[in-house]
Length: 142
Image: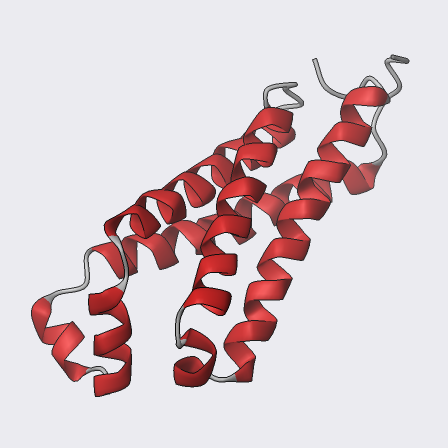
């Protein structure tokens, strides 16, 4: 471990991660607090998909988004605890996206854009874990 000063890009990446994960939190809160009226306004295929989703999926979604947000805050604060939170977030994202895209009709209901978004979410979660591990190795986190 070296204790180098992080480059300016470090804080840019950390802030972008916080913003990205705030968007994830908004998505999570929007989904779990959807009113019956809002649910009824969705196309029937989407209503059926939400109704068939097991309760544990919301738990996994919540873990993924909260861990990602806290990991991003930790990264911005240069804290080592960001690393395990990013790992937890990646695991949650992989389970959530894997289940949604492989075990449900979500790709058919939401289309290819949703599949691409799922892949993007996994790639960003994996990148943040990788980046935080590098930051730890370089001594940027304490």
